[in-house]
Length: 315
Image: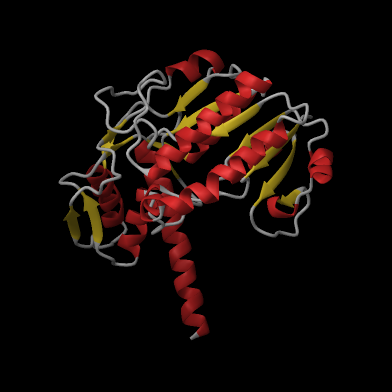
């Protein structure tokens, strides 16, 4: 049994990583930003150096998913995006450099870090020209991690996931189009698509993302950067149309779709080449977009109906 520490382990992707590692028989310590009375969970804000030193004793690997913003929120308030993310990440890297950690995975973004490019699928060697404060800050985090690797030999591996989706993702948060489209249909809300057919994205199931991150943690080469995607790009219109077909079979009427102009931070097309991760670790995505959408719809429909019954009972 190995011991791992996951920062941000109660987030959307983090929960899948923690559950997967624990299912393999490993001990997993989670450090997060909210107070929870759970075994092997610690609140980042209340940690002292001595306590973290105890937590990090005999840790085989660390995954850092902690991040406080999205592309939209970063664009709305770029100063807060910097203040809420960069100091804590640098503090994390500084502290990690004081411990004997074997491997550290920094979770970046494949969806925002490259910006608009003619290279699709995009390899890790492509130019990084982010067009949102979120992408710029993520790139800064990568550069700091690379600096600590170069100057202090911190064993850092960076991963850039595509657009993750799946059970557990909440709608209407400014990211997570599949979740928002699904609940827009369930709640009969008007759906907004930016651009005539929307943007092109590499949607990847959260289970595949989690397994890709774990693969990088266990088998990735220290100092390297890896994309985690499917290599398939589809428009947001295609995704909404497919969800609509699934919903129609369940008797749901598709709400009105409103087309809006692309926002300044919307990358037009983003599809990731993950052949490097496959070559180094053997990982590859396994869940098709269509199967993942059906899974999310069926789960959301059941959950939505259950909550509707609960509301009726309490009226």
